[in-house]
Length: 304
Image 1 (cartoon, one colour):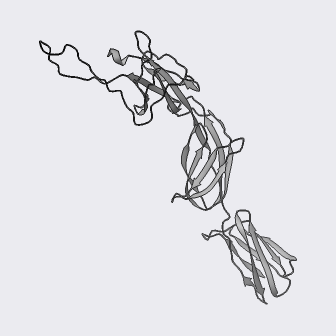
Image 2 (cartoon, rainbow, N blue to C red; image 1 turned 30 degrees about the vertical axis):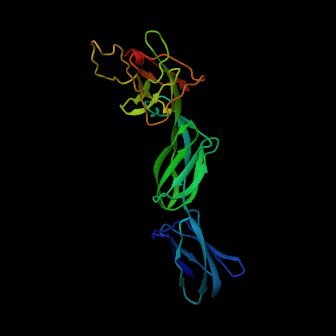
Image 3 (cartoon, rainbow, N blue to C red; image 1 turned 60 degrees about the vertical axis):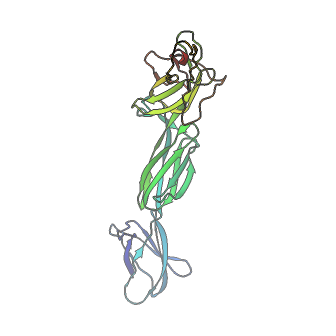
């Protein structure tokens, strides 16, 4: 008789593991299944050398030779985990919250999203793409903590931490947020003329500056890749300048003041014929609704 216990790497039993006793020609002689404690028992017809095969749906199979004499033989089997799997659905959060936070249930499956799994050292472990329904799957993962990153064109990338056990399946859905291009024009309040070299600043609802743009010759500006939400848009002109002059006989009666246009760290938005124009709300707050939104702020730098 051959008996023993089937365990995994940490010593825990593997109940339900299938054990098969074969002779060296491959013929099956006996079969058994491990009980809740991982114990099993196989009975060979006579003494001799036999092959014991142990398999489990959650672990890698193992085969070993045993020599049976005239007394019971103990043969314990240690199975290595086959690795865990990670999968889920990639969805797109539609506008409905503020500053990129979507309302619950406002996501739809998104295909062709690149998903990257990196370990704690920053090493890329695996890369895959979501299918047409947004489903993705990683297989044969070892236990540990990983960073799952999802990215796609015209969608804000997402990086999330996932914990992978030694075996089993982990379901982790990912929600991406759509982003929008915001364009607008700054005009003077009196004559309605476009104001060039004005500074347009976009501020999020929590008070953070999203970005600033200097208007082009036609007064236009553009913010690319803006998350849906509520913002404040402001427009300002040149900073004031001061110069000391003396007026009287023998002194010039004409003075020239040079205004310095505003600057931003990033590239200024150039004027473009394909950018539509729109009006601003009275309080300067603007909520994005479409693929492209326009904003107009009154104020001519030359009149300030």
